[in-house]
View 1 (spheres, rainbow, N blue to C red):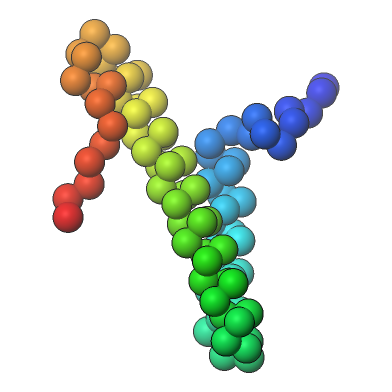
View 2 (cartoon, rainbow, N blue to C red; view 1 turned 120 degrees about the horizontal axis):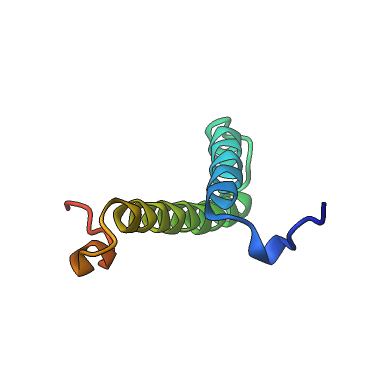
Length: 83
């Protein structure tokens, strides 16, 4: 069975790998053994991973809405979390 290229990973797999990487990054930062520059770079990477997780969750929410009621056009609108 041929594997999908990395650019075509499923949103679920992307979420799980991004979440794992984010958790490892946070653990590393919590130990406080990074320089300021390393911490800043890690924070920037963490923000990127967080955004990837959010996007994957939004895609999953949209899929659930479409599967739940495909005839309702309002179900295709992106999920807007409460502030």
